Image 1 (cartoon, rainbow, N blue to C red):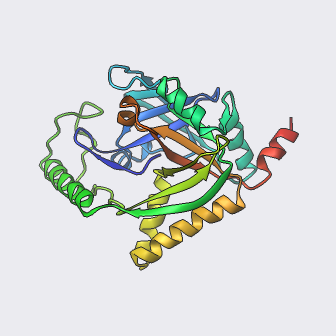
Image 2: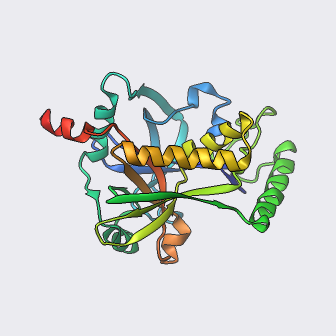
Length: 278
């Protein structure tokens, strides 16, 4: 899941990407996940199976993997694939099942340009570092204004469009997610010989920064801890990157419409052990 973002129609949303049982990719968007947390029976976590009625609406998003929830009442929560009890290998099975693991970013960019895919697994040849950049004051001011407007709308109980076609998920205890004032990116090399820097939009990296701040760290120390952890992962684990395109960037034929929506980092040797088991 991506870190929550503000939405004019749905207040706050995340994008969820996952695998079907056959291993194929699926994107579910928009999902007001933190609003759903107010109804525990509708809350799912990462690496958890869910069953839900989806619909593809190409007039709104024509990327081949993109779906919307047709009926939230059909959502059923299943088992979680924990990292315990050989869980990394079980996760690995679905990461590689019925899909290629790319190592050439140029190939992915061409496929996205042709709208043949918008989600992919990428194995970087080398990760050089983690780049931390602070958002501009103008960007933060823009977010603050949008948040203020949405908060007034939410508090007033107004809703022009609801993802569930009702107002049942409004709750007085809901608080909008904090805007992280920094963006973090991996700089990496792939088999095409080109270095690229892609932003990591995974919820985990935003929560790591927030937890550091909650523990009393300064922004500078919090940023350093985030960079240190993700470089430690890159050095000590078998890292695969889950990539997804930003819709408007893909439709505008942007130079690189991809962001990192998840970092998969099993212990070294997990993929080799899995291959030996078959």
